[in-house]
Length: 401
Image (cartoon, rainbow, N blue to C red; front, side, top):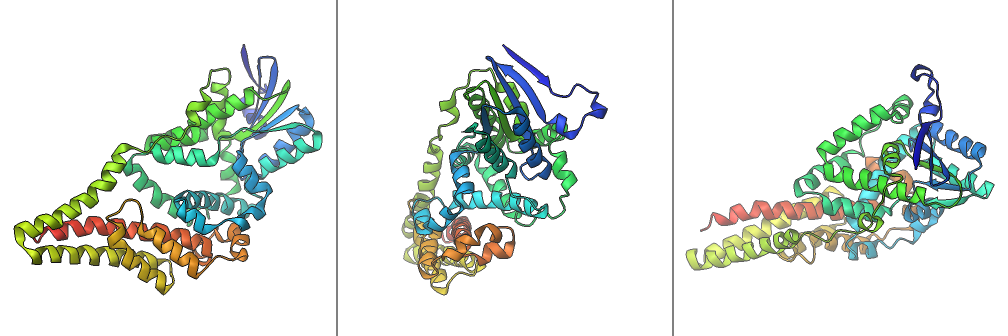
């Protein structure tokens, strides 16, 4: 049997912000105290610490996964990152996405003099101090990002990328009062509803699935008294899913790549090559040579401009120019990867770059100055230039029929 009750029974007018974000429920003989927080809120951090001290729980569940926990507790692991290995494993987009999200959160946190996710850190520290069991209740961030990306339609991916890059420029006008308002359920639910209408795949993977995952982990945590700390946006979903049967394997599985992606990836090179061959038979050798010339020129120029945009090494720019016309015909390799490996060899990131990464990601200048983020941006920009070059070159080639 599942019973819900809000801790504060006073009238809504008298309810404090604190009371609105503490929820008590009982499930299978366990008492669960769920705290909804804003991840960059000073008040949330103080509230979490105080509730754990007062409740003396057997277990504390936090909205962190192993990857994020390790990143918080072992900050020096950044210094061991092998950027060349990241490029070879084709994980640059994943790492760049994580850094862009961290950038947005950190800028807000810096503005108010707190650490991103400080309420989680305080929860862990207080739990360790009191001898409570700590449960990392969130799904691995890498699985979440990969599920999000694989579930998205192409047009939504195109809309998402500029928005993520624009996040470097925003957050300057956000007040502490605005942050605290994010913890008021009615405002947050409206924001998530709008978000879900715009990009439903993102809401499904980032919010809905994690609500189920968090609920399952919390209700199955050991002990009779459990304090769970989660972002306010997850609270309604957690409350809704506790007590329900959750297929954890289903929400923890990375979807396979769409077969249409492979068709698209190999179809364009096949069409380009077929176009050149057809030009030879229908319009002669000169037509084919003109087609090849425009293919090389457009791909090379736009990939080169992508490298120039991030102030790459001259040799990297040259590598981008040379690689783009060839890699555009081979889905197994990308011009951006060639550029990234070249830049990483010529301008290898130093320990200082990893140590400064947390500070550098808070500004546009920092993204361009830090060798790590500049390499990630380089890969993205060169790949983007080469992709645009492909679609620009094809119509120009068809003029020679």
